[in-house]
Image 1 (spheres, rainbow, N blue to C red):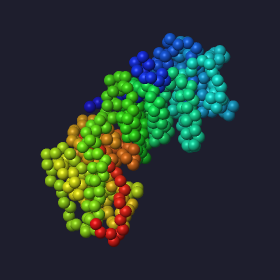
Image 2: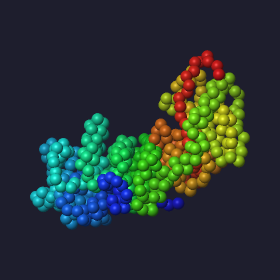
Image 3: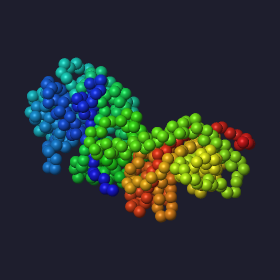
Image 4: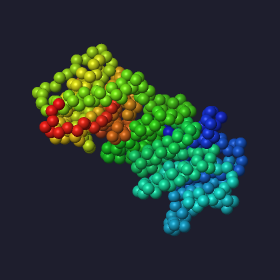
Length: 480
């Protein structure tokens, strides 16, 4: 199934369409130009508005041939159409600190907007200076998260300025806030996604309006080239998450983002947006029935049964494993072992389990002693181990390998007569994106990077829940 090329943006719609008690509206989007329509809508019936741009780049460049307005020039229309009384641009630097070469480059950027500088319709401030001033006009904020990439090597400074900006905006009760993810301006995927989540959660906790819309298409040929480089870098570096444009941005989002949207869902504005959010979070909806059937206390009991069974097997060293005979049940169970840094064994009964206690008792020794990918568990390493029990719902075929929820769905990869299972809990320690999850299951199946795109491979997904806990301390001479 071919998926449309989508350009992702988050949108917080007009107050008239949302019944929120708080009048602050936040609009997240992929590219900064996507803030244009919302700012124009807001300013249509307002007067004397100042727009505060917090951005590493000055988005007032010449118009491109392909698009009238891009993320490099979207401010043009805003000024020329008198939608905003004044724009205050806050970059990460102070112009006094720039060398002559940098000043020259920025002067070229300002060519189109020179008259507006003269008319004081555009001003440049540093954040410290701006935050100390008092203003009487209504201010709206437009933030590009690439602003914070400069501080990635100084985490304390980045956290402080981010907290300062968020608190300032909130205390000043800005009626409209737009926030651009701008993946093309980001450097480190893990840090960028974490920063995005921090902004999203900040406003989610404040009960602000959170809506989401996804735009279509690439903005330029350059973006296609950027995405190719990202894909190559991702495959070579074995990253847990990455970047992309459109729906591919969310295919590269860490599993924690899917969980965040499930807990604090944005309202989808378009059908495309609704589809992507539904796919990203549907696994959590489906697993709700499993959670009722298997509360934490029952999962902990199953883990304890599996742990005791494995400890007994490590001490007695059986010659061959015992297997569970499948029934017509749609439930399955998996058991996974990790030490402090890596996997040490895994085994699962995909389906047909109607006696979970018996399945747990049988799966643990197979994972610990008979998984040929790993050396058998030794009693000497016992206290460094962590055990993980998973319960699977019914596995169903998915035509598109990306149609699952990372962190909530288990996957089966089927190639020829071989099947490989990857439990949802694999995301727990690594916060894997969809694509990273697919790369891991391919690697587990002995397939090369990128094999998940192979049309001959079949995929099955199932909602699942899991419980993870360290091994109970044991001594080498201890018996069951």
